Amino acid sequence: MKKTISGIRGIFGEDLKLKDVLEFCNNFSSLIKSKKCVIGKDTRPTGSMIKDTASAALMKNGIDVFNLETVPTPVVFRESRKYGAGLVISSSHNPMEWNGLKFIIDGRGINEQELPQIIEHQEILKSKIGIEENISSSYIEDAQKIIGNIENQPEIVIDIGGGAAKEFAPKLLKNLGCKVQVLNEDLINCSRGPDPTSDELIDLKTASIKKEIGFAYDLDGDRLVVVRNGEKQTPDVTLGLGVAKSLELGYKKFVLSIDSSISIEKFIKEKGGTVQRSKVGEANVIELMLKTSAQAGGEGSSGGFILPEFNYCREGILTSGLIASMLGTSKFNEILNYMGNYFQIRDKINVDSNFHDKLIDEMDSKFSKEYSETSTLDGIKGIIDEDSWVLIRKSNTEDIIRVSAESTDKEKCKKIVENTLESVKQSYDKIR
Image (cartoon, rainbow, N blue to C red; front, side, top):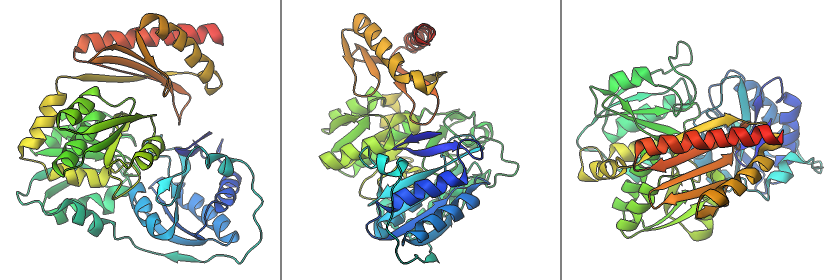
């Protein structure tokens, strides 16, 4: 089981059980000052069981529960702004046998100071039992106000992946003025896995050849992958396109995670904007956004664009609408051409979580000798030159070490990743 600010995740029935759900939701109750909580789930088969258990635990502690049923994660975040707290039953892009809980306070995910209050037992004073009420969301209408109408009626194909975006992404894009073809509406007979960033997206790539663009969402609708002309784009392109739209809207202050493409940072600065870097992870990006009053940003590794005025979370559905509004304009091609000169590779290696910290220390020593400049903001990052870098860090959600690299030379980038993975393997063999 993983317990981080990204949420609690585990294989349901093995390391995540209903008694765990009861305990974590009991503890979460102590953070809900409004005594109201919005709850929603993705399409995982175990979602309803966990949602009912979570609702019971919250109501037992005097929390009124407002049930959205099956909705994308961004919808729960959006509605939680009205009610004060939110709970998402999902493990995002993890395999189908996983599930989890994502906790929301005041429209944002929990931070490092709040996490211990959820994973360590809290004694809650007995109070009047809360009520449960089914509600609907104004998410689509709210998103339309941000994006505006799209006049040129672009032809778009979207791959739902059997996820919770089913009732939201097609409707939003159609309402904006797009012509939309939908793939993989339901989990039954779905041709791809829950994570579009790692899946080949074969059906979407084929369908996109005859359309202006293709969009793929993960199971809970917060991640977005772009496909153009039959080619899957890197997750950084999703972020870059969101940033380009933000610059078009006049926004200047951005926060990017430390593993996001240097090309996006350079593009922002060339347009007169400023960039600050955060640790990887949606909650870390948002925490720095709040501290610095940033207007937009996100993390490239997850295809996660964040627009704080609308939501304090990755926004796969809103972002697809924002990108669609740029189709056929010079701004759309400008950012893609700019980013096309850079190559990012992200890989991973299995490493038991118990060895993560020791391994990072080992690699810190190696990087300090190998590179003239390093950063320990999140894991260890080696700066190779002004256009090339490599980063290793421990995953917040899995028993793996992640390796990311970027360069303007594709072969150089491949070599950097290969050498770093081999170095991580050698260090892991040494310490265990």
